[in-house]
Image 1 (cartoon, rainbow, N blue to C red):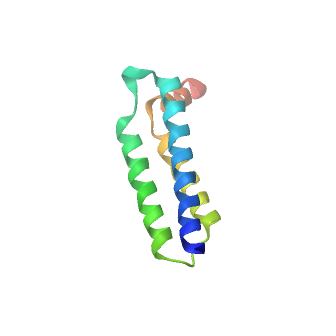
Image 2 (image 1 turned 45 degrees about the horizontal axis):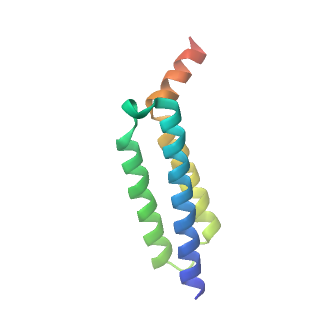
Length: 91
């Protein structure tokens, strides 16, 4: 039961972070410039982490949530709105 509960919590965290990313990018870039490739990479990475959490019992749920949070930030850094914002900030 503990293994399944950890996997469900991990899945909820992945869905929440992915949804937050999608809403933020839609608000920043608009519907015509939405980063579908980055969203796909985020979904595949989340599914990979969920399967790893289900397979290996020794992984803590907090660790997996932290790894996915960092992965979400990394993916978000390579989208056009963030890159344009950094360009405007620097120059």
